[in-house]
Structure formats: C-alpha cells, structure tokens
Image 1 (cartoon, rainbow, N blue to C red):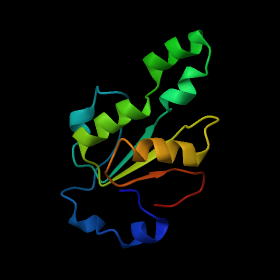
Image 2: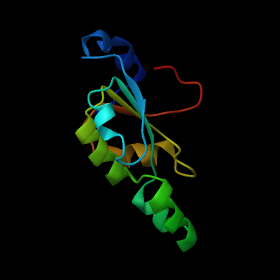
Image 3: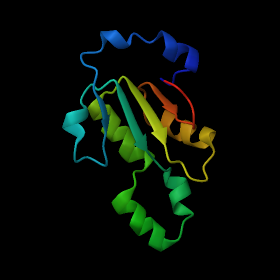
Amino acid sequence: MAMSKAQLRQWPWNNRPSARHVWYVKSQNIDACHRCDVLIHEAHTPAWLATRPETFRRFSTKYHTTTPELAKLALKAKPGLLIIYHHSSLSPEELFDDMLARYSGHFVVGRDLDVY
C-alpha cells in the first residue's frame, strides 16, 4: 500500500526489528536489507525502457532496475518503507501507478527535498 506524507509521520518506526538503512543494487545485497526500515532504490518502468535506444536498454539491463525487478526484490526484503527514485523522464504518477500494480508494500516516489 502506498503511503501519504501524513501517514508516514504516523508510522510506528520504533516497532521495526532494527534501525538499519540499506542501499542496494539488483540482488547482490538483498539479505543485508531484510526487514530494513527504509529501502531507497531506483527504478524504470518497462514501458519507458521500451522507448529507449537498444544501446541504452543493454546498459540499463546491467546497471538499472525495472519496476518488476524492484517489486520482486522488495517483496523479498520486506522494508518498512520503499522509496523509489531515478525515474528519468517518467512522471511520478506513471512510476507510482506501475509500481502499485506490482507491489503491495508501503512505498513512495521520492522527490528532491522530501523528508521521510
């Protein structure tokens, strides 16, 4: 379920099993993130990626994450909050809607200067 800023302020962070904040890329460090409080991760939608040149798609496969990949990682990691960033020319709404169709945990699309 996605959360509004007001709901985030009410979130019982002290009820989480630990106070770890973890960044990771693809699946290399997924175990270190299990049940972390906040997971900050980049993502692109498959629809956006399909509009990019082939050279970029090959690069992206190696160095970026799609929303289906991120949903799978987040389902395994079970973060208290998933913050998605690096959404290129996507609108935040496009990224939000795509992720909402794939992931039922708490998430937001990060924006510059937001506080969580």
